[in-house]
Length: 499
Image 1 (cartoon, rainbow, N blue to C red):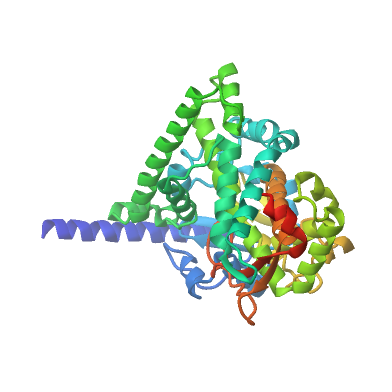
Image 2: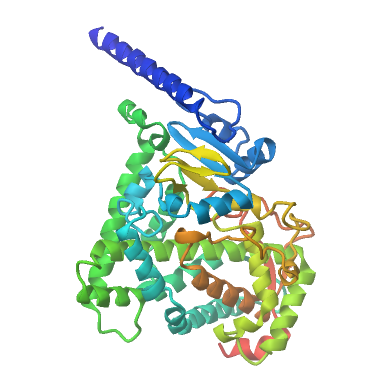
């Protein structure tokens, strides 16, 4: 009885205190020029309940709807966190240009604490000397054009393996294939060979990466309502802790094993980092190397495979565009060899297809969240320090005021200059926190999509158009995995039979 009364008294005290804070905050906010908000605010949870009004609706679509209704700049409350959502080019330019340093920070989240080595990896680390060192390693040592060129043979081998696998299981008639699994396997194997020098066929490792990617975007209630941890509502947190421990052990084993086997013929990105560690052990710790491995493998696998699945889906729904791409490849590459890295600069239409796919289905529809480090203003509105920033790339890249026939798939629009001004097209982000892997991703996607178009005929499995419903996830996956029909092209049989 005494315990029950004590718990009741504690709950009342906490609730009273929270309402008091809410009242004080509201009084203070009246003196500031704050961005517009939306109706439906509730104490403690803020606007969180409004984000699930439509079941299975991805967050970027919900925020796009709210922006179209209430304005392109909105200040929401996700529990205790103020969240600024922007979906106009002028606001994005002010955030990522004028206030670039202020918004160069990342929010500290439960998922990044346990799955990103205590938020120390390049994508989640706070802005400062540590992050600048990570950025330098990524851009100069690992993802420079010369380094990417040096890995061309690995990419070519993996593309040949993919094409050979499809060809060897094909008949003269149409054959069915589920492309989500095929493309994910290709991307995973390619990244593993480029990053650590070998494929990892162990099923648990693949499952671990998949689980980590899913949990990375799972909302942990404690991120927005911290005091729920007192109530023991920490199921997601426990999963994150368990998975984070396993990831740390596995990546450490990977580093230790590679360190013992340095005298290998094919140098991978991990060897570059281990060589740097020998020269400057304090600057290149095992923690930094493990974090880089995780980022390269996860981001390189998920974003590339997802975008290629979207691209194939769009091409199947637009057979004329598919034919145009094939004619371009036939003209520049021919039928006597497979497409290579060196062909890509000449295949402008193929590059436009990838751009248009990324416009409609950006791999990060809200980018990674930013956070303000000091008070600032955006479009004349006062933004407090510690405000999370969500940039709705998805909404901007489909804005009918910026794009002709914004919802249509038209790769040729980029030849006409669309998307070239300001912040109209930026699927890899912009500013200091722009994704450093853009060149690597475009190279892998162009080579893969080009080889598939060059070597095979593709059709939908039925008369119905391919379902383009979006799922939920870090890289905007298709809700329904792509299944299609294919058969080898007659003009490529000589090349295919020699793979």
